[in-house]
Amino acid sequence: MHKQGIIRGALAVLWIGLGCFLFVTYRGHTVLVDNRNLEEPAIRASDMITVSIDGGKGVEFFRGDRERFSVTGSKHRINVDFTDGTPPFEGVFTVGIKDDMYLLSIPKMTHNIEPFIEVFRTVQEQRTPEPEELPADEEPFEGGAVWG
Image 1 (tube, rainbow, N blue to C red):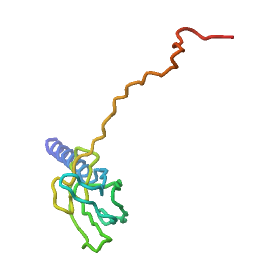
Image 2: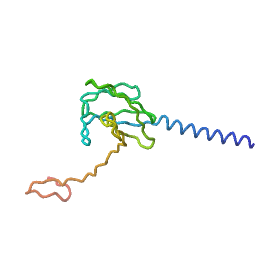
Image 3: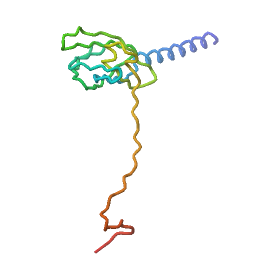
Image 4: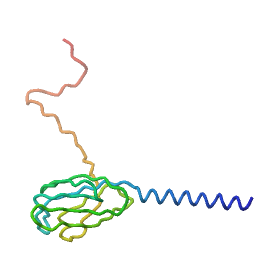
């Protein structure tokens, strides 16, 4: 019986390890690729580029564009082809396990400005109800339905 318990324990550890490995390897993320001008330092984004991640289909970007890429895993290869005669750029970036969405700046990456990739969080706007504007001679209605 003791030998059977050891085998069961080893199988449980193996399954847990396999589950962790698959989670880390195939964890999906969203990467927002940004081709916008930088204010500080003042860098102008390229007029038109083609970006591909992990050998996927290239997506055309104009200055000011932002596109969404879905990736799996943590380490990724990016290729940027320029239309202005600049040599192609190849780089590598990694994303963490914890967060779901990242923002990658092409101008920062191609100019070696850190951090060129950062966690992207959406901000929930607090909505305050606007007071309804009524004409000056009309008062708000308070009460039940009016029939007539």
